[in-house]
Length: 234
Image (tube, rainbow, N blue to C red):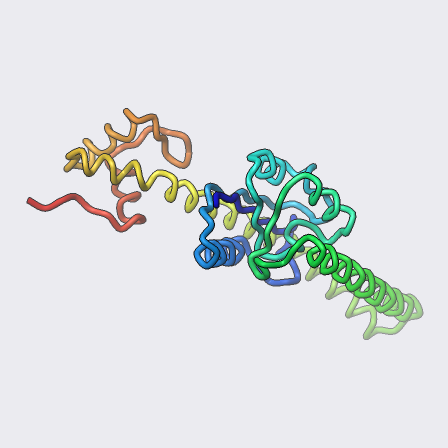
């Protein structure tokens, strides 16, 4: 069965689950091998889970393929029950960590996750409010905690943005390599035995680099090393 994958991290930070983009891709690929799915493409993006799935550019592209959608965990689609219920009417989706779950079970998991998120959010707000009140009353220890938290949040946002961009780039490059590998093997089978001839073959087939450019001996060499392939001897 052909499927498409979808991976997501929130803007500015990794999700509390600790799942980065690469880890999510591994979950999806592992489930695909176990279930006999063929992952035709993996869409990835950095966007808040509060944004409805259909309003996310890459998620919308994935859904538009008309194939079952696979995510590593349900919260990568959304933590909002309304979002999940709406998606169920539009697309068949699977969760890598529980591939046999049906729509009723997925809806139940989504409801429980939303309730837990609300509880955690309220507890956090209450704790921060109490800390701020102590700081406002002149408690030096509380003032120091508020300042440290503000500095940590600022540093986390900056680092998170850079990490997310690098992770997304890595996932896209891996997906591009998987897609072009059959064409490399085809060119080798056709008799290409130099870096230049392989570059010419790929360019003739209309297959571009991950940056949408033409192949050169240098970029072909990097690709072959990444794919673990070489020229036939003799």
